[in-house]
Length: 184
Length: 136
Image (cartoon, rainbow over all chains, first blue to last red; front, top):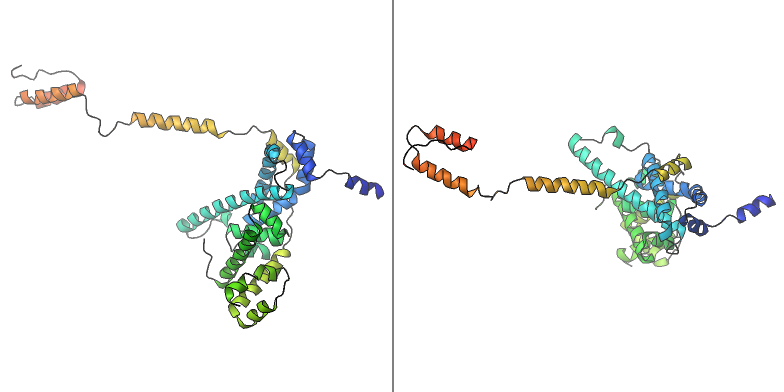
């Protein structure tokens, strides 16, 4: 037991691993992947609402991490930097999917089978009712449990702006529930 | 306190800060109360969201790392070259026909004799000069 604790304590932190990844160390990269893949996947899943998309985005996020490891030293905390990558990728993909779905709906009257959401849980059912940017900030705050400061760092904005975005997201949920739809 | 000022306190209210003026406004304002209650319910639902298990494996990432990256610029350069060639091949609308040919047509038209029109047209199409008759 004592040996196990000692072993955990000697594991290098994310920033140290990132420095090693920047030199091409794949074992450090693997450690970062195993340590953070569930978190990255969860963000992608909540923003896109699709597990297959989230898997793909998780891989892409870590590939971006590997390729850009050298350029991020000291710029931001590792977790917020990693989250910002997956968040941007997820928002972009969700927008593409939404645009395609709207087109299909216009031409065929209803989404194709593959475009329909799959049995979302209550949280996803709620997130799916608002635009991607609102999903993103709601996910960071309540699903991932980020502080306002961490949200601000992830979104690269002042803390006050982050709180304002969160307020707007709550307003969007309220409008959606009231059936007024959300403004874009 | 009005609704705007109350709304500005929503985030801190969700964080557990209870101010008497906010509580007082909520007690008398159904619209703000609806927003605050929906926000509280949203936060609770999202906080209890189940955590999905990713299926992806390290080997999948490793495979993609070792795959040569597709570069976009050769394809873009090829597409630009094809587009440029296509533009050059399309004659411009204001491009005049060769001057010499136009002069010949006009001169030929002047000298066409009755019954020789078909021969004139054939000669223009195949590039030969027909015997158009008439004075030269």
